Length: 368
Image 1: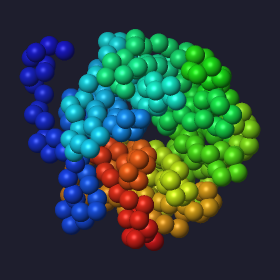
Image 2: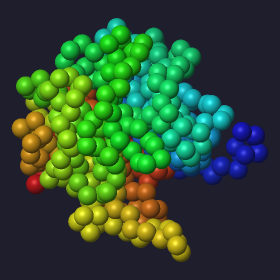
Image 3: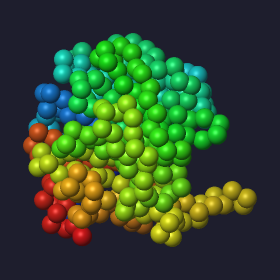
Image 4: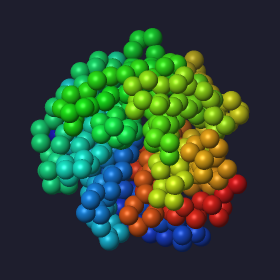
């Protein structure tokens, strides 16, 4: 990018300074708007608490989703600190768009980054890139292709499914549509085998946890913008039940769940759907269409391993700024830190990433 092009960018919004502050009117919530290198598009955040207590956040940032100049960036919140660092670039292939980063730390301390890389605006050409850091994300080995695809995408973090392997939820983008799979490595990330998730045509971005009984439980985004769908596996992810709709709405946007130290499951998602008639009109002329609302952004808790979700509290609702764009508040990621706080990051109107911390009690106190 030339200096002229850089100079033509609008100035960064002064709110996007990365400082964690108490929310006005609700000091139990702390929130920060992360500094984004490019003001155009920020999306698909991934959070990771490291073994030393620092927290990393990766997302894709650039002129537009699918643009060749859109790349993965990384910011850090030091242990005990209240300000996120300026983001560093972790990908810069001049011919490809690099999106949907996923972070993980192995028991040996290495930090892994996975992200799809595809020809501009063509997810069917994606292969999966991996990078490894040996110093908690400060420097990185050169990128390598973890899976050749084509059309392989990821969104949610890997986990040990209970047998000492490494399971990474994935999905395939093809001419006829999308379908979920999982990638499993039996050699600590050196190689990956792919396993189908049955009955998931047009259901993507699987988020998985282990249940108390050792089985796997997963939730999926629905392209139909109707409901979150669920699947289970009793053989460490090699085979899966057919996907069924849950009680929870889905607006064709991502969801993520995690297990808390209390034993509860926490899920972050948009509590809206076309099925419920919650939409806005976007586009113009022949391209005008209904788009499910990407508000509110909601935290839900389950005390029975995902079978019911009786506790819900909205984390972000529409304000005046929401109606200025079609994007909303979406694509959340969630984890629990060593201090017990729930850390949630999500796309803030696609202008930057918002990081919020709350407690499990905060959800239960205000939940339905």
